[in-house]
Image (cartoon, rainbow, N blue to C red; front, side, top):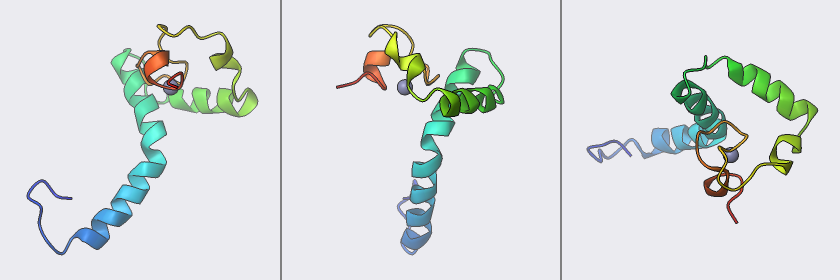
Length: 82
Ligand SMILES: [Zn+2]
């Protein structure tokens, strides 16, 4: 949807929505890095860590800790949500 709700853009918007749905976890991770004053390209290190150790960083996360995925949200509000 465009802010104005223009007609005729639904096809494009559906494609964009699928694209953003796919990249959203990465965008959130980068936004989290930037909000912590860290360079967004640290996402490459994070992705490498995730490939090497899929769930290890989440095992010891406390519910009120920042989520290990780097989203900047608390673990209980992110990957720790029920
Ligand atoms: Zn998370």
